[in-house]
Image (cartoon, rainbow, N blue to C red; front, top):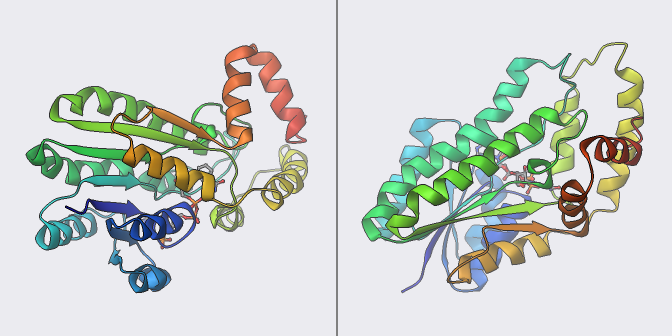
Length: 272
Ligand SMILES: NC(=O)c1ccc[n+]([C@@H]2O[C@H](COP(=O)([O-])OP(=O)(O)OC[C@H]3O[C@@H](n4cnc5c(N)ncnc54)[C@H](OP(=O)(O)O)[C@@H]3O)[C@@H](O)[C@H]2O)c1
């Protein structure tokens, strides 16, 4: 029987390429996002696109009910929808940060809550949560985004302990920088950010080094491969750091003292 997979954030980046790869591998794939017009390729490849805003309870409820009506179950949920909104802690617009939390944290929880009753009924399932290297190490100017991914990490760990008894497993993907729509959204969000005089020089130094990171960033295949591996392995790893920067980041964070790590990261991002 073909496994039924729901991928959120399937209109772009990791979600889109994961959905297309899973269709190629013979899964029944539902891709969910707000921009349905960006999921034409997914439909043409044999997948199903669903209009879903993960911040809206009714929208999530309708989407999940549609899949259950058409397929009877959801075997795998890939919680991928998310974006980066960066600010300094002192000057952040809290409403803007809350909007990001609504997607990265509450959106992930909302979709999970709607899917879990059906997975428990089947006594099996897999939930793959897309975190980030930012969920392992917090950086200046990215503190709120990092904290949303730290939340994804801790919620995923608790969830794994809670639902293992029902035959459901949880894996976390921790990508470093990859070339997707992520960078564009970061700069779009930045248009609304007022950092104030004291922080402006730090931001002026950060912007070119962030741009450079993404100019040199690899394409998403390794992340897609890690997600597919977590889906296909009987017992997936609990976390997959993907990309040299993510692997190095996790290693350095475990090795160095906080202050040495702080200095290293500030130098690397040209923010000292
Ligand atoms: N690229 C990186 O360097 C990187 C690194 C680490 C982690 N990540 C994480 O990877 C995940 C995917 O991002 P990406 O890099 O593939 O970026 P992307 O190309 O911008 O894709 C983001 C996806 O999230 C969806 N989304 C955003 N808000 C949504 C909402 N309210 N409801 C439903 N879907 C929503 C977008 O769809 P619509 O706008 O059409 O709704 C889009 O499909 C995110 O969780 C991100 O934090 C990315």
